[in-house]
Image (cartoon, rainbow over all chains, first blue to last red; front, side):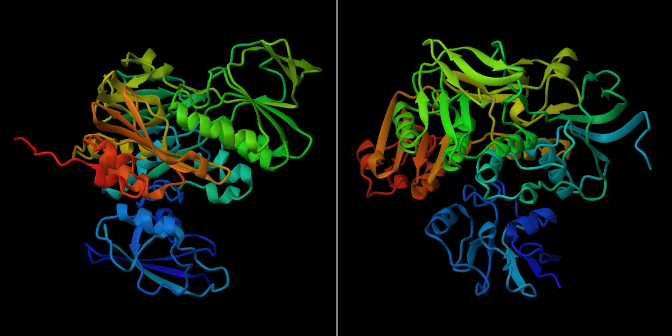
Length: 106
Length: 413
């Protein structure tokens, strides 16, 4: 069973649920499926902050690095749940994890 | 069904499947564009990301499958191995080696070809550029201890490759024609820093190097003949001296341009129904002495693509960028914001010896650009300070945030 990522679109109220491959980031899953509001301009290089998401339950992911924390200052509407989608890697050891993130810009 | 129809028609035909071309398609789809979209790629690979080629891919940290660049959705057709050879702007046709494509709107997103040195021996086996996935695969084949790699050009392509090569035990020499590295894009302080880092890592760097020719035996490269009289032995030669925009078919069709095709703020060329985007276009950018700018970057490709798609969708969004760019070499994260052309003062913040510093470029006290090395905070602040008046004393204080150096100005109406 492939892990699922559920994208809740904050502005439109819509929702997209897509399959992910272990090792992919939430940003890659989003861009590969044209999920609106996630651009991933720099390709995951911690240079752009265009993959901003809210993630309430972050237990499946590595904690935020200093660089990610600082770069998130570029994101609009930052909250305590803010993360960069490129830093949220779908775990290889938890393949049946379902992850929910909210996209603030869509 | 085999793709043999001699004339294929699209509402929007995009020439080039790099970041700019694919992003125009994705923006059109995201914006609800109802027409048909065709993309031509001269390459045989599915679209892929280029920046990691000389970074993670050469370092073996990024797998080939991870380079994949998404383009698609219903209504998008990708034609691989189709290089646009000619444009008829009157009949609205693009010609390739074996067919013609009719377009309603044409988007030219062809990027550029690696610039050639123009010396003897350049055609020898083992001499290559690093522009495509095939080039990067070819470089990786030779990345092992014992290989002597000469890199001609001390720009980002050459230096990122040098860092990856030397880490793999390759014997690396960088030959740079100017008297410092990265001369076209940064200031002497930053050039000095990179020079020291590369030398410390074991890369030989020759500045003010003159290349007389490339020598070979039995059709394979053996060395590089230098102006000093030395023949530098080399199993491989990487030529990384910039690109030449791929715009000849458009210029032949009558589009204005020279160093790239000229576009307006919406990406429109001087020809009706034809846009250009990314590395191959030069757009209005008034910052003395500049009038126009041609950029080779992801930021430019994707943000300009947004403007072009917006124009095609009838919701104009003029392209007025604050450019940004990054480079990874060893554990150095270099990030730059803005364009430093025309600066009259460079202020260094932090200490290069500690491998964490920034350089602010000012003109009449106003920020034009910021280069940051291993300093995410300064990079983040830099994105908002370009164009603002800065307090020099606060600027140089590494304890204060860069953004706090901005001098508030009353906005006159």
